[in-house]
Image (tube, rainbow, N blue to C red; front, side, top):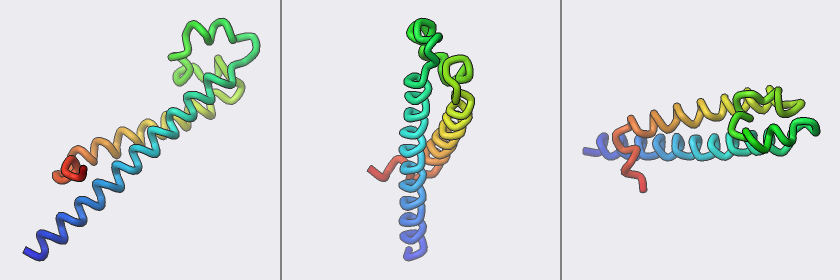
Length: 97
């Protein structure tokens, strides 16, 4: 019984840490996406107004540092997706809150 209780506490702690990692990764993904939108090249303003959702995929087309933001956004998106997937797979993952 004591071992089961320790296991439950450990699973809850791991689930909470994964949830926190996913939350932070989501914030960083949104930050880099917004930076790509805000740092549009002067001659691309009209084009960027019509297709802002392409910014994560075509970063170099919109901004000078677009590829850097695109790579970081992709890394944070992967971290978010993997941590949420593991969070869902862990049995106690959805019993935290």
